[in-house]
Image (cartoon, rainbow, N blue to C red; front, side, top):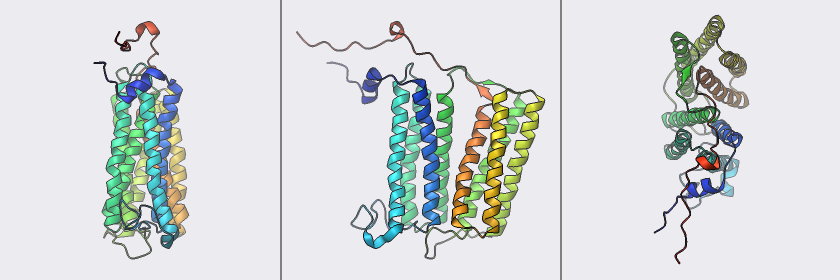
Length: 326
């Protein structure tokens, strides 16, 4: 009986994507992860969180929004449809990473990790609707999206480097300082979800349960953590200059400064203008850029060698095609 090949193996036999294609596919997953966060914020900021009244259907008896649901139904349903686009983009990355020779199992595993995070987050989004936008479930939904963004950024980085054992470009104390930066930025993101869950933008025009904390106090904690992230970034920049670190990590820190400055502008403008929806949305977009910049700083402090070379015909170990019976 001839060997049965899975679809990914069949594609790999007939298509050899370039390294640049795999890298662009990985970058596309990063972009889509950001889009999902921003459009999810748009659903909440437009009071469309319950535009579809149930899940997995949009309304009882209909998978799609009806005319009676108006624009809120369209916004919520449109965000649901974007999940399929996200799955398609991640699918392209998985296929490209699998087809690329030599096969890099670590890269395909990261692609599948993204897929499983999406699969896990879909019912969490459904529970968000079924519980009437419970703020704790909303926070979990956002944090899972942040986890997806994290894996996407790591996939992008791994698509651009080799598979050698990681080699630190700086001393251990500098790496530890970077770890502190990552932890502080992660805490900033988590506290940001508490600000969202206790703030005025509940996601629906009707009364929605909020997290029972003092909104101004939790906002002040959020601001304090932002200053800690800025302070750690400044300390890291001076440290990298002092130890004469390579150009890549120093450039990544400068890019982080630029993103933090932009995010600071969004933050103060939204506060002094009374939290207008548009600026709050830009602040959410800025939060994804900050997290990406922090991760890139962390990842540029080690190297894993060049990309593996594509093997020649003599180096490929291909299973011979089954011959027809005589």
